[in-house]
Length: 115
Length: 112
Image (cartoon, rainbow over all chains, first blue to last red; front, side, top):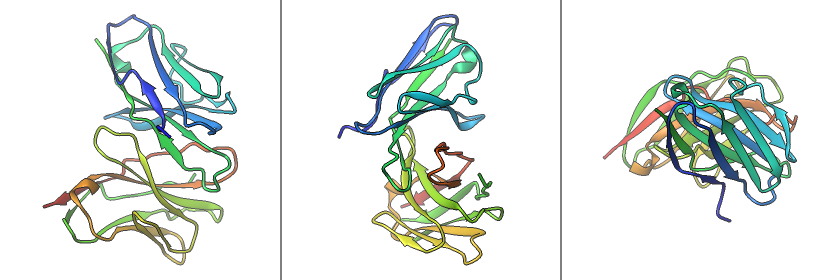
């Protein structure tokens, strides 16, 4: 298996632009998580899905952020409009209920820079 | 989920055992101890987990005290590739709340 796939790996955009981050979870996994990592705040959970349904979005910073999971093999995290303070590394992770210990598998991350 | 306390940084000589401590004095009976690590510029990686018994896998050993208020992750023969931030996480398993709370972790530097 190729593991969790994220695209793009790097994104540089200007303030006010729309940004869409993409994630393909590991096949067969029924949980998908979006995290954000910054030097100031560390690694924080934004939202997670179970069977394509959003379960907890309390970590989404504000209405500019939205996440979707139209099917079991694809999820997007959108920021519109983007701001410089959104600059961070965004990680997607997936996991399987079938695993007894709920390990999460992380993707390589997308480094977002908003100018 | 219970809060954990880890030293911010540690050094270890290459080839020696690295012992990373974690305090979790408010842990509940149904909470597991998990360890993840994050190598620079990569996503976090699962290492090991345990409830109350000591655990060992191909990566590391986990020693949990009898009162479960603290634990130690042991990398038996540290290599330069083990240089990373190590996160100790305490959480309930199987409740549906599968999110992980990553604190600040311990930055381990393996020295040649």
